[in-house]
Length: 287
Image 1: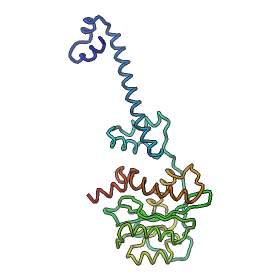
Image 2 (image 1 turned 90 degrees about the vertical axis):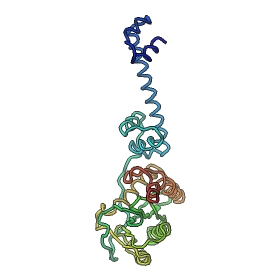
Image 3 (image 1 turned 180 degrees about the vertical axis):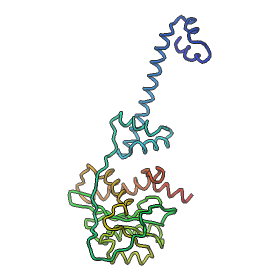
Image 4 (image 1 turned 45 degrees about the vertical axis):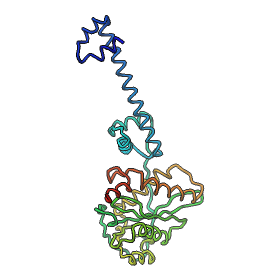
């Protein structure tokens, strides 16, 4: 109690004087004060670690330090990225690791190819100016499940998708038709893809013409021309399928649907748009 009194009044009175008056030593007080300080730091660190751990597992080990820090800030626990990174290291928590993935579509064909209208300009000032599309493959015990997506470059929201056990033209057409339906069939949108046979097919090109879209295709063997679509697939594979075995295509189909619609589009913080979700970013446009 005497040490607590000195601590509470040290800004007003001399520590040595109070120690003599109360009959305690200065060294004893300073040792007590140091223990209290260490205990408070320990408690604060434990509280932070608990908060970091809660966010980390809530997002199924998908978030690293930048996104965890943003999440904590929104929850009323502001702390910087370095502090969060230290907490993650201290607890042995590591976000899912990146891997390299191969391209899927086949560009070795004799079908007509559209020019590269996009030219690696992935910026957009409003929705429905530029969309990018691509196909990837996901493994199951039954064989591959192919996924085609359409992404709006304004918000990075996945606005169209389709899945099938075969990689055919209908797959990319279904994804584009979903995007058109969800966006109320806007005309004049640049729709960019690689030059795979599915995108050069008559069925896909007729869809482009019917809805007055502007077809754009990557240059041969240039992965950067469609990097936004490939980045999404990389994220999906790292955060959803890496290290997980799926017994059937239907099981994986349900997981992909949930990931896209209830997590990626609506919850996951995207670095390109200020660490908010694509849906939240588009809501800012409406507001």
